[in-house]
Image (cartoon, one colour):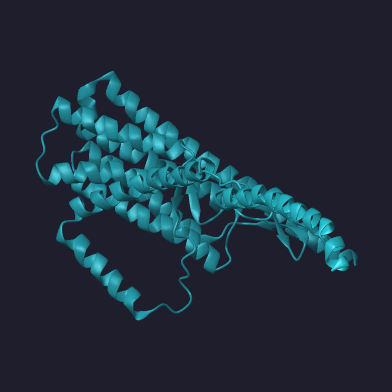
Length: 326
Protein backbone atom coordinates (compact mmCIF):
# COMPACT_ATOMS: atom_id res chain seq x y z
CA UNK A 1 0.00 0.00 0.00
CA UNK A 2 2.77 2.40 0.79
CA UNK A 3 4.38 1.75 -2.60
CA UNK A 4 1.09 2.50 -4.39
CA UNK A 5 0.63 5.74 -2.46
CA UNK A 6 4.17 6.80 -3.27
CA UNK A 7 3.70 6.06 -6.96
CA UNK A 8 0.42 7.99 -6.99
CA UNK A 9 2.07 10.95 -5.27
CA UNK A 10 4.93 10.82 -7.78
CA UNK A 11 2.42 10.88 -10.67
CA UNK A 12 0.62 13.88 -9.16
CA UNK A 13 3.93 15.68 -8.69
CA UNK A 14 4.92 14.91 -12.28
CA UNK A 15 1.58 16.29 -13.52
CA UNK A 16 1.99 19.44 -11.45
CA UNK A 17 5.57 19.87 -12.66
CA UNK A 18 4.51 19.48 -16.30
CA UNK A 19 1.73 22.03 -15.85
CA UNK A 20 4.15 24.47 -14.21
CA UNK A 21 6.57 24.03 -17.10
CA UNK A 22 3.89 24.55 -19.75
CA UNK A 23 2.33 27.45 -17.79
CA UNK A 24 -1.11 26.11 -18.85
CA UNK A 25 -3.47 24.52 -16.35
CA UNK A 26 -5.42 21.57 -17.67
CA UNK A 27 -9.17 22.17 -17.84
CA UNK A 28 -11.07 20.46 -15.03
CA UNK A 29 -14.84 20.09 -15.08
CA UNK A 30 -17.36 18.56 -12.70
CA UNK A 31 -19.80 16.26 -14.51
CA UNK A 32 -22.61 14.01 -13.35
CA UNK A 33 -22.27 10.28 -14.06
CA UNK A 34 -24.82 7.78 -12.72
CA UNK A 35 -26.04 10.30 -10.19
CA UNK A 36 -22.52 11.03 -8.89
CA UNK A 37 -20.44 14.15 -9.40
CA UNK A 38 -17.10 13.31 -10.99
CA UNK A 39 -14.19 15.58 -11.90
CA UNK A 40 -12.99 15.18 -15.48
CA UNK A 41 -9.84 16.72 -16.91
CA UNK A 42 -9.34 17.78 -20.51
CA UNK A 43 -11.76 18.78 -23.28
CA UNK A 44 -13.44 16.93 -26.13
CA UNK A 45 -11.58 17.41 -29.39
CA UNK A 46 -14.13 16.88 -32.17
CA UNK A 47 -16.92 19.37 -31.30
CA UNK A 48 -14.45 22.02 -30.13
CA UNK A 49 -12.48 21.59 -33.35
CA UNK A 50 -15.61 22.39 -35.35
CA UNK A 51 -16.26 25.40 -33.12
CA UNK A 52 -12.72 26.62 -33.76
CA UNK A 53 -13.33 26.27 -37.50
CA UNK A 54 -16.47 28.40 -37.23
CA UNK A 55 -14.56 31.06 -35.31
CA UNK A 56 -11.76 31.06 -37.89
CA UNK A 57 -14.31 31.46 -40.69
CA UNK A 58 -15.79 34.48 -38.92
CA UNK A 59 -12.34 35.99 -38.43
CA UNK A 60 -11.50 35.44 -42.10
CA UNK A 61 -14.80 37.12 -43.06
CA UNK A 62 -13.72 40.23 -41.14
CA UNK A 63 -10.35 40.31 -42.93
CA UNK A 64 -11.99 39.82 -46.34
CA UNK A 65 -14.55 42.53 -45.64
CA UNK A 66 -11.85 45.01 -44.66
CA UNK A 67 -10.22 44.34 -48.06
CA UNK A 68 -13.58 44.91 -49.85
CA UNK A 69 -13.74 41.24 -50.85
CA UNK A 70 -17.36 40.89 -49.84
CA UNK A 71 -18.01 37.76 -51.89
CA UNK A 72 -15.47 35.69 -49.97
CA UNK A 73 -16.51 37.35 -46.71
CA UNK A 74 -20.12 36.22 -47.17
CA UNK A 75 -19.07 32.71 -48.19
CA UNK A 76 -16.95 32.53 -45.02
CA UNK A 77 -20.03 33.40 -42.94
CA UNK A 78 -21.94 30.58 -44.66
CA UNK A 79 -19.12 28.19 -43.72
CA UNK A 80 -19.31 29.44 -40.14
CA UNK A 81 -23.07 28.79 -40.12
CA UNK A 82 -22.55 25.24 -41.34
CA UNK A 83 -19.86 24.48 -38.76
CA UNK A 84 -21.87 26.12 -35.96
CA UNK A 85 -24.88 23.96 -36.71
CA UNK A 86 -22.69 20.89 -36.97
CA UNK A 87 -20.70 21.12 -33.73
CA UNK A 88 -23.74 20.95 -31.45
CA UNK A 89 -25.26 18.01 -33.31
CA UNK A 90 -21.95 16.15 -33.33
CA UNK A 91 -21.59 16.73 -29.59
CA UNK A 92 -25.08 15.34 -28.94
CA UNK A 93 -24.63 12.34 -31.25
CA UNK A 94 -21.23 11.42 -29.81
CA UNK A 95 -22.21 12.26 -26.21
CA UNK A 96 -19.36 14.78 -25.92
CA UNK A 97 -21.32 17.71 -24.54
CA UNK A 98 -19.64 19.85 -21.90
CA UNK A 99 -19.97 23.22 -20.20
CA UNK A 100 -16.66 24.26 -21.73
CA UNK A 101 -17.96 23.49 -25.21
CA UNK A 102 -21.14 25.53 -24.64
CA UNK A 103 -19.21 28.61 -23.47
CA UNK A 104 -16.64 28.24 -26.24
CA UNK A 105 -19.42 27.98 -28.82
CA UNK A 106 -21.01 31.22 -27.55
CA UNK A 107 -17.71 33.09 -27.86
CA UNK A 108 -17.25 31.72 -31.36
CA UNK A 109 -20.79 32.81 -32.30
CA UNK A 110 -20.11 36.31 -31.00
CA UNK A 111 -17.15 36.63 -33.37
CA UNK A 112 -18.67 34.89 -36.40
CA UNK A 113 -22.24 36.20 -36.14
CA UNK A 114 -21.78 39.35 -34.07
CA UNK A 115 -18.54 41.12 -34.90
CA UNK A 116 -18.07 39.81 -38.45
CA UNK A 117 -21.46 40.87 -39.95
CA UNK A 118 -21.28 44.29 -38.30
CA UNK A 119 -17.77 44.98 -39.60
CA UNK A 120 -18.61 43.65 -43.09
CA UNK A 121 -21.63 45.95 -43.32
CA UNK A 122 -19.58 48.83 -41.92
CA UNK A 123 -16.85 48.30 -44.51
CA UNK A 124 -19.42 48.17 -47.31
CA UNK A 125 -21.77 51.09 -46.57
CA UNK A 126 -22.12 52.16 -42.94
CA UNK A 127 -18.70 53.83 -42.83
CA UNK A 128 -20.19 56.63 -44.93
CA UNK A 129 -22.61 57.51 -42.13
CA UNK A 130 -19.86 58.47 -39.70
CA UNK A 131 -20.70 58.08 -36.01
CA UNK A 132 -24.20 56.87 -36.79
CA UNK A 133 -22.74 54.01 -38.82
CA UNK A 134 -20.48 52.57 -36.15
CA UNK A 135 -23.16 53.20 -33.51
CA UNK A 136 -25.56 50.95 -35.42
CA UNK A 137 -22.82 48.35 -35.74
CA UNK A 138 -22.14 48.45 -32.01
CA UNK A 139 -25.87 48.09 -31.24
CA UNK A 140 -25.96 44.99 -33.42
CA UNK A 141 -22.91 43.47 -31.70
CA UNK A 142 -24.31 44.27 -28.24
CA UNK A 143 -27.64 42.68 -29.14
CA UNK A 144 -25.84 39.56 -30.37
CA UNK A 145 -23.92 39.32 -27.08
CA UNK A 146 -27.10 39.77 -25.05
CA UNK A 147 -28.88 37.17 -27.18
CA UNK A 148 -26.13 34.61 -26.61
CA UNK A 149 -25.95 35.31 -22.88
CA UNK A 150 -29.72 34.91 -22.52
CA UNK A 151 -29.60 31.69 -24.52
CA UNK A 152 -27.00 30.22 -22.16
CA UNK A 153 -29.03 31.18 -19.10
CA UNK A 154 -32.29 29.76 -20.51
CA UNK A 155 -30.64 26.59 -21.80
CA UNK A 156 -32.63 23.56 -20.65
CA UNK A 157 -35.59 25.59 -19.34
CA UNK A 158 -37.31 26.60 -22.58
CA UNK A 159 -38.96 24.62 -25.36
CA UNK A 160 -36.19 23.44 -27.66
CA UNK A 161 -38.49 23.63 -30.67
CA UNK A 162 -38.40 27.43 -30.54
CA UNK A 163 -35.82 30.18 -30.12
CA UNK A 164 -36.65 33.19 -27.96
CA UNK A 165 -35.55 35.96 -30.29
CA UNK A 166 -33.93 35.67 -33.69
CA UNK A 167 -30.91 33.36 -33.58
CA UNK A 168 -27.56 35.05 -34.17
CA UNK A 169 -26.73 33.02 -37.33
CA UNK A 170 -30.07 34.03 -38.87
CA UNK A 171 -29.49 37.68 -37.96
CA UNK A 172 -26.00 37.48 -39.46
CA UNK A 173 -27.48 36.03 -42.64
CA UNK A 174 -29.98 38.87 -42.89
CA UNK A 175 -27.15 41.44 -42.78
CA UNK A 176 -24.48 39.59 -44.75
CA UNK A 177 -26.70 38.32 -47.56
CA UNK A 178 -27.98 41.85 -48.05
CA UNK A 179 -24.38 43.02 -48.55
CA UNK A 180 -23.66 40.11 -50.88
CA UNK A 181 -26.74 40.72 -53.04
CA UNK A 182 -26.00 44.43 -53.37
CA UNK A 183 -22.34 43.75 -54.13
CA UNK A 184 -23.11 41.17 -56.83
CA UNK A 185 -25.59 43.51 -58.55
CA UNK A 186 -23.22 46.49 -58.33
CA UNK A 187 -25.46 48.56 -56.06
CA UNK A 188 -23.56 51.71 -55.20
CA UNK A 189 -23.31 52.42 -51.49
CA UNK A 190 -24.90 55.87 -51.60
CA UNK A 191 -26.12 57.64 -48.49
CA UNK A 192 -29.67 56.41 -49.07
CA UNK A 193 -28.50 52.81 -49.48
CA UNK A 194 -26.34 53.19 -46.38
CA UNK A 195 -29.37 54.35 -44.40
CA UNK A 196 -31.37 51.33 -45.60
CA UNK A 197 -28.48 49.05 -44.64
CA UNK A 198 -28.34 50.69 -41.20
CA UNK A 199 -32.08 50.12 -40.78
CA UNK A 200 -31.78 46.42 -41.70
CA UNK A 201 -28.83 46.01 -39.33
CA UNK A 202 -30.73 47.69 -36.50
CA UNK A 203 -33.83 45.54 -37.10
CA UNK A 204 -31.70 42.39 -37.13
CA UNK A 205 -30.18 43.37 -33.79
CA UNK A 206 -33.55 44.24 -32.25
CA UNK A 207 -35.11 40.94 -33.33
CA UNK A 208 -32.39 39.06 -31.46
CA UNK A 209 -33.37 40.52 -28.07
CA UNK A 210 -37.17 40.73 -28.48
CA UNK A 211 -39.32 38.04 -26.86
CA UNK A 212 -40.46 36.65 -30.20
CA UNK A 213 -40.41 32.92 -30.80
CA UNK A 214 -38.82 31.40 -33.91
CA UNK A 215 -38.95 27.80 -35.00
CA UNK A 216 -35.56 26.21 -34.26
CA UNK A 217 -35.75 23.02 -36.40
CA UNK A 218 -34.12 21.15 -33.50
CA UNK A 219 -36.89 18.58 -33.32
CA UNK A 220 -35.94 17.21 -36.74
CA UNK A 221 -34.74 13.64 -36.30
CA UNK A 222 -31.61 13.05 -38.35
CA UNK A 223 -31.05 9.45 -37.22
CA UNK A 224 -34.31 7.78 -38.27
CA UNK A 225 -35.71 7.10 -41.71
CA UNK A 226 -37.58 9.83 -43.60
CA UNK A 227 -39.94 9.66 -46.58
CA UNK A 228 -38.33 9.63 -50.01
CA UNK A 229 -39.98 12.95 -50.87
CA UNK A 230 -37.78 14.66 -48.25
CA UNK A 231 -34.63 13.95 -50.28
CA UNK A 232 -36.32 15.30 -53.40
CA UNK A 233 -37.20 18.53 -51.54
CA UNK A 234 -33.61 18.89 -50.31
CA UNK A 235 -32.27 18.49 -53.84
CA UNK A 236 -34.84 21.03 -55.05
CA UNK A 237 -33.69 23.53 -52.42
CA UNK A 238 -30.06 23.15 -53.49
CA UNK A 239 -31.06 23.70 -57.13
CA UNK A 240 -33.06 26.85 -56.29
CA UNK A 241 -30.19 28.27 -54.23
CA UNK A 242 -27.72 27.58 -57.03
CA UNK A 243 -29.73 29.72 -59.48
CA UNK A 244 -28.80 32.96 -57.71
CA UNK A 245 -27.27 32.36 -54.24
CA UNK A 246 -27.21 36.00 -53.00
CA UNK A 247 -30.83 36.77 -53.90
CA UNK A 248 -32.24 33.39 -52.84
CA UNK A 249 -30.40 33.33 -49.51
CA UNK A 250 -31.34 36.94 -48.78
CA UNK A 251 -34.98 36.15 -49.55
CA UNK A 252 -34.87 33.11 -47.26
CA UNK A 253 -33.33 35.23 -44.49
CA UNK A 254 -36.09 37.84 -44.85
CA UNK A 255 -38.84 35.19 -44.77
CA UNK A 256 -37.42 33.56 -41.65
CA UNK A 257 -36.92 36.93 -39.92
CA UNK A 258 -40.54 37.85 -40.62
CA UNK A 259 -41.88 34.46 -39.53
CA UNK A 260 -41.41 35.30 -35.84
CA UNK A 261 -43.42 38.55 -35.82
CA UNK A 262 -45.97 36.88 -38.11
CA UNK A 263 -46.54 34.01 -35.66
CA UNK A 264 -46.69 36.47 -32.75
CA UNK A 265 -49.36 38.57 -34.46
CA UNK A 266 -51.37 35.48 -35.39
CA UNK A 267 -51.27 34.05 -31.85
CA UNK A 268 -52.21 37.44 -30.37
CA UNK A 269 -55.11 37.70 -32.79
CA UNK A 270 -56.34 34.28 -31.70
CA UNK A 271 -56.21 35.39 -28.07
CA UNK A 272 -58.15 38.57 -28.82
CA UNK A 273 -60.83 36.67 -30.74
CA UNK A 274 -61.22 34.22 -27.86
CA UNK A 275 -61.37 37.05 -25.32
CA UNK A 276 -63.96 39.22 -27.07
CA UNK A 277 -66.13 36.43 -28.51
CA UNK A 278 -69.81 36.99 -27.50
CA UNK A 279 -71.27 34.44 -25.09
CA UNK A 280 -74.95 33.37 -25.56
CA UNK A 281 -77.10 33.34 -22.41
CA UNK A 282 -78.82 30.07 -21.53
CA UNK A 283 -81.87 29.38 -19.33
CA UNK A 284 -81.98 26.94 -16.43
CA UNK A 285 -83.42 24.11 -18.55
CA UNK A 286 -80.56 24.46 -21.08
CA UNK A 287 -82.53 26.36 -23.73
CA UNK A 288 -81.14 29.56 -25.23
CA UNK A 289 -82.71 32.99 -25.33
CA UNK A 290 -84.86 32.25 -28.40
CA UNK A 291 -86.62 29.31 -26.75
CA UNK A 292 -87.18 31.33 -23.60
CA UNK A 293 -89.85 33.46 -25.28
CA UNK A 294 -91.83 30.37 -26.22
CA UNK A 295 -91.57 29.05 -22.69
CA UNK A 296 -92.80 32.36 -21.30
CA UNK A 297 -95.83 32.25 -23.59
CA UNK A 298 -96.66 28.77 -22.38
CA UNK A 299 -96.35 29.90 -18.80
CA UNK A 300 -98.65 32.86 -19.46
CA UNK A 301 -101.27 30.53 -20.95
CA UNK A 302 -101.40 28.27 -17.91
CA UNK A 303 -103.40 30.57 -15.56
CA UNK A 304 -106.07 31.07 -18.27
CA UNK A 305 -106.56 27.35 -18.60
CA UNK A 306 -106.85 27.06 -14.81
CA UNK A 307 -109.60 29.75 -14.77
CA UNK A 308 -111.55 27.90 -17.46
CA UNK A 309 -111.43 24.61 -15.58
CA UNK A 310 -112.51 26.30 -12.34
CA UNK A 311 -115.57 27.80 -14.05
CA UNK A 312 -116.50 24.44 -15.51
CA UNK A 313 -116.22 22.79 -12.10
CA UNK A 314 -118.46 25.38 -10.47
CA UNK A 315 -121.10 24.89 -13.17
CA UNK A 316 -121.07 21.14 -12.74
CA UNK A 317 -121.53 21.50 -8.98
CA UNK A 318 -124.78 23.42 -9.48
CA UNK A 319 -126.32 21.01 -12.02
CA UNK A 320 -126.14 17.61 -10.22
CA UNK A 321 -129.28 18.29 -8.01
CA UNK A 322 -131.68 18.72 -10.91
CA UNK A 323 -130.27 15.65 -12.63
CA UNK A 324 -130.87 13.55 -9.46
CA UNK A 325 -134.39 14.70 -9.18
CA UNK A 326 -135.08 13.71 -12.73
